[in-house]
Length: 154
Length: 154
Image (cartoon, rainbow over all chains, first blue to last red; front, top):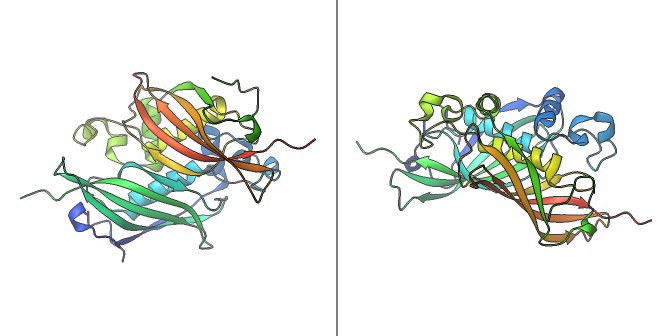
């Protein structure tokens, strides 16, 4: 089930098993290199020729770039949570490389909901987001703890 | 103990408990907003006034921006590993917010070393990197699984 971003969801609106799907983003080579220059200046992210001699066998995006694109997709079209997407932390892995030209989208599922005992206006939603390329390969799995608002009392 | 980046370390050179310390980076407000526009367009990362009414009570950097800066610091001055820094994944948390003007550095410790059984040329180093601000507050804890080369046989 997908939910349109016109509905902003509170913790009370979520249920375990609920699924969301984002729009897509094509990651261009120029973006891969620009991110790398700024945040992850290593040859396999910056130099097409030198990257062939690394364990990646060619240019790949920084994992943190994949994570940042995933965030963008989830903020804009993926997870329409009231109060926005506020992460307390999470587990991230990159089972496959992201390469220039890849078309990425994100599929997410709510796996746990934890109302806060001390703060009645919020809780934690544990959400697994899989970032998937045009060949249906999962390039990132993020299990995130998100702080989500509870529905205000009227 | 710190290790200069002129020594490139193989898995065989590492030991549990080994520590590393990076140089520092001052995160400017213009950077916070530029990263947010590109990857995390939410009001608490982009609009000083509107951010005051959020749970952050002011402008804060995206957690993924803190992660990206941490990577830059570790690549350039933090973790001088042979073959570079290749992450298979990890756990990240943000115990405190990063704010404009913060001066960040990274302190890392090797907590586990796992030679690969199937690939004799490499292994995994589990490294905890704490990103720390000018007030000695930890703004990010990253427990990363890094793929590290083994020393080549001569």
